[in-house]
Image 1 (cartoon, helix red, strand yellow):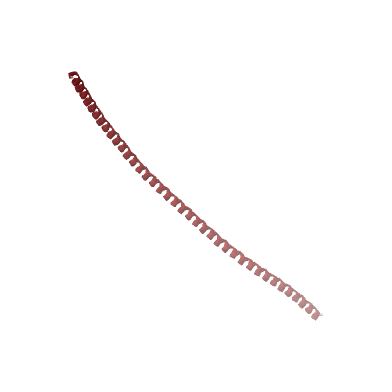
Image 2 (cartoon, rainbow, N blue to C red):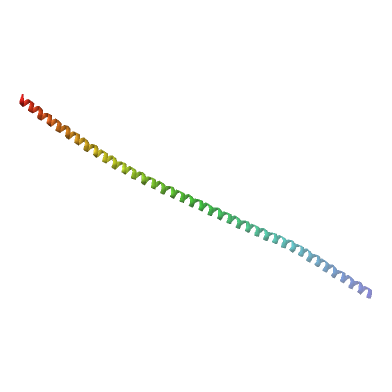
Length: 141
């Protein structure tokens, strides 16, 4: 009877050991699964960090490109302004030269007109003298 009791006890103990062994194996499988999930999560976190850093670098590069574009456009605007100022200055100088030429041409035309008047008056005076001389000669005849 004692042997039976011991065998039963041993059998129960073996059953408990097998249950505990199965529970231990299940716990180890769960631990392995959790470790694999942890590694996947860590890899995802690293990938997200790298992606965020890449995105930040891309945004920084885009910002720098935009700033460079703005600077180029500002420089082009300044260049156009300088060219416009230079062109305006040149046009003003040409206008003054033309005004001086017009004034000189007017003065020259007025002088020629005065000279022509003098010549016309001299010719008229000469004609009047010849007319008077002619009349005198006719009266003498």
